[in-house]
Every structure is written in structure tokens, then in C-alpha cells.
Image (cartoon, rainbow, N blue to C red; front, side, top):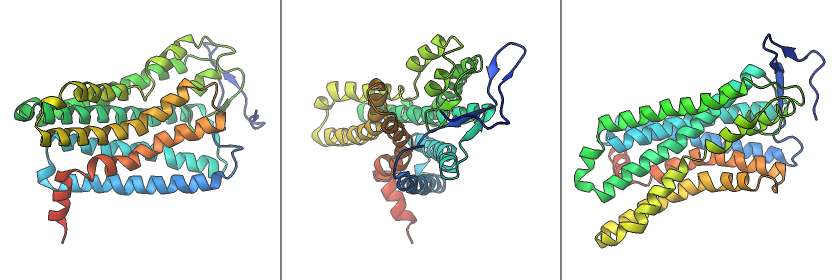
Length: 314
């Protein structure tokens, strides 16, 4: 365990809740050859910024892409830019320059901004899966069922709901006392490693229940379920060309969801059997890879976007 500097001491407020002025993010400490992983993270971050910024620019400039679907696509690209920016630069600053001490308030802010964008990535994938489902299953009613107003309302509701489900467990964190270790065994101020530190001197049962009920990867289960039901019951009734298009759309989206969803859930399922170093690297990859892959798998290969790029080319 890493001890706090000599000038750091525990403080107690009038409600007897003990809050350390600083936490220590252990993260990748002690993992060999991590400098290569940091180079990889820099590459992923730069590619995510370039790809998603390009997507937002093209959608903004091309009026043919001002459709309900691309409202959701723009929101996904914006979420990916904000999410990677909230996580990767801070992560590199901590572990490349040894600034792994983080104040109590900064830790809660770090948790809020990282997790809210992870939730929004999941919700955006659900919205896009619904859009494609309606477009393929009910093409004649698509513009009635998925209007501009409906898509704006849906994405707005997703943001409001994401803020609520992040603030809810965060409020339970603020009620905990930390009287033991201040070392967070993760690459950011994640919920489970954070409330686990309070277990010796606080009742963390509500936090434990919340961590199982609303982990930020869970929303993708709805996206997977949407496509499983669709593939199971609908493609057989479609014309062969439409069936091929439907399966192609579903496959691309499910690959993206699988990359985002499966590794993290396998890690959480076997958390007691997977070495800590492997768990941390695996979870960090599932946080940074999807924003880089979203433009490639789900956006840049779509026919509308290909046509738009051809028209915008000199």
C-alpha cells in the first residue's frame, strides 16, 4: 500500500463522515513495459478525435445528412470525443508524470465525467439500433415513427437519464467514511474500487447493490436484445436483398456492441479469478477502443456517408 505524503491527514466533518483529502490511483503501477501501452493509448486517442471530429464536421456541413438517424450519429460522435477526452489525457498525465494523487473532490468529478460518457455511449447504441430496426422492419412508416423531433427528444432524455443514474450512486459515495487505505486499484475513480475502500468503516451494501443494478455496460444488453429478437423473428419474411441488408446492418452493430460489452462483462463476472493487472488493462481497453471504432464500423461504411464524401470531394 502506498502511503499519503506527510502533509496529508484525514479530516472529519461535523457529521462524522471521514473523507481523505487525497486518493492514490494505483492503476498501471508495477505492470511491465507499460510505456508501449501508453503510446498505444495516445494513438487510439488521436484516431478517436480525428475520426469522430470528421464525422461531426461532415454531418454538420452536408444537409443531406440532417436526418433523424444522423442526429443520433452526431450525438454518438460527440459523446465519444468527450468521453475519451475525459479519460485518456488525465490517465496519461497521472501515469506518465507520476501525478497519481487526486483530491477527494477531483476524484468524484473524475468518476462523474468518465462514467456519464460511458453511459451515453451505451444509450446512443440503443438509439441507433432502434433507428435501424424501424428502418428495416417498418420502412413505409419510418418517417412517422422516427422524426427529427422524436430523435431530439430521445437523445435529450438519454442525457437526462444518464446524469441521474450517475449522480444517484455518486450521492451514496459522499455518505461513506474512508478510515483505511486510500489506494484506488483502478485507472480512474471507478465506483467499485472506490466504495470498497470504505468497507472497513461504513455500510457499503447500498453501493454494492447499485454496482450490480446499474453498471455502465448494462444498457448494451437492450441493444443486443433488440437485434436478437429481430434476427430471430423478422428476416425470414423479408425479400432476399432486404434480408441481406438487414443482416449486414445487424452484424456490424452487434460487432461494435460485442467489442464494447463482452470483455468488460467477462471481467466483472470472473473478477475474483482474473489478475488485477489484466483486469485493469482489459477494462481500460473497453473504455478507449469503441470510440475509435465507432466511426469505422458504424458510420464511415454507411452508404449515405460514402455518397456524402464523394460529393464533398474536390
